[in-house]
Every structure is written in structure tokens, then in C-alpha cells.
Image (cartoon, rainbow, N blue to C red; front, side):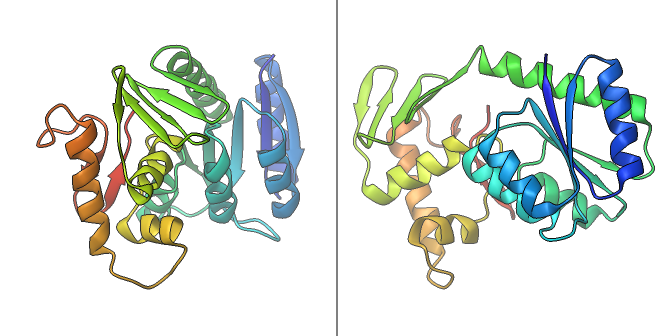
Length: 229
């Protein structure tokens, strides 16, 4: 049975979501507080998380960012806001889908099933994670040994190059801006973010068959970089 976590402070909406999901055979847990929801999301195992953006304690965007730092669990964002900015921000932080209130509970349930099926399919085919090792399409990185292997060949990366690659591979499909990469790897808010472009170029030269047509690190012009599944 698939386990679903609903983080929603509106009890009527949360209970409606739960009812429709339970009809489809899901095991559902509801949390109405942002801080409690974040704790459960990162410590327990769920097949999908339904996350409201406006929450008491911690907002949904912050919760989503914390989840993506440690897990790839599918996340469906729910919000009363219809502005494109919020949708773009949510998807950029790693959300798998976005629905605005009011919405059809049956459509919500259908999207939940679709995302779980898609995630399970991807997990069982071209992606595998064992302890500190990540393997995606023939490229394997091991955080414990700081090693990189591409199609059986050892690749030598500098410390910063490895950290950038591991960050992107740990959160496939998530889009990182240059600023976000810089802050994550250098642990600083201010600095020369143009160095990210240089590091990405060097990484591509070492792991890509054709650096001019990258298959592993994708550029989203004007936005940032991601490692596509």
C-alpha cells in the first residue's frame, strides 16, 4: 500500500483529499503544521507528499527545499495562488506538479497515482542509489570515496567539480541557478558566481561524450542547470 503525507492547514481540504485517496487504496497521514510536516517528510518514508504552500510555522516553499536536499519523494504542491510566479518557483525548487484551489479531488487523485507510477518506473530503470553511490545512465558518483565512473572509466574531478556534480545528480530534474549552486558548494552568499560556468564547462569536458551536446548536465538558458533523468 502506498503511503501519502498531506501537509495542509485547512482541515476540510485535507480530509477531502484523504477521502478520495483512501478510496483508491492509499494510506494517508495528515499534518496541519509546517514544522511537524517538515519533520515527518524528511524522517519518514512516503510515496508522495501533497504540500500546501501557505502553512503556519514554515511555508511550503521552505519545506519543499528541505525535502529536496535529502529526498526525491514526489511532491504535489497545492496553493490558492494562481500567479505563474508561484508555480514557476515551486517547480524550480523541485516540485513534480502544481495544483491551484479549488481543484477536482478526482483529478488530484489521478495525478498522485500518475506521479507515483512514474517515479517507481524511473527508480527501477535508469536510476539507482545505493548508500552514498548514485548511478544514472552509466555515470556513477560515490560520495564516500569521492569517485566518478563513466561507462566503466574512472574520471578525475577536482573537489569543487565533484561537489557540483554530486549536488545535481542527488536532485535529478531539479533546476539550480548559479547562485544556488554557489551558495550550496561554497557556503557563501556573495562571490563570483561566474566561476560556476567555468566549473560546469570543465565537468562536461570530462564526463560528456560531446560537451557541445551535453546529455548529463543540461543548461536552461537564463535560469540555471539541471541533471535530467
